[in-house]
Length: 139
Ligand SMILES: [Zn+2]
Ligand SMILES: [Zn+2]
Image (cartoon, rainbow, N blue to C red; front, top):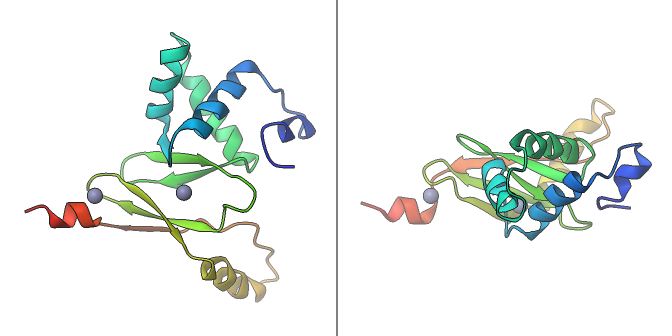
């Protein structure tokens, strides 16, 4: 079972703080940086610890509940829902924009390459860095 409840099965406590960070991540459209999550959470819960946000995000990634996407100067996060983790990301190094692209072949290619090492691939995070159309259009 995916979702926050699966933490319990891993012997991790489902604290209100962890619920809050997960909910904020789910509610944020697209991808959110830790800073953006801190801002939206502290609007609801003033004084919420930034370190709790960072630590919870690390935990969610470690437990396979969230994906971390490396941007040029920060990291963005998104929750992993059943069936939506086949997409990959394009990151604009100028504006930091993160774009989802459907690339169902990518995990297959990696899986084929990994086969030679008898390596079982669970997930593939591929990030294409470059310049988005909007930034490219700017003089
Ligand atoms: Zn851009
Ligand atoms: Zn995404």
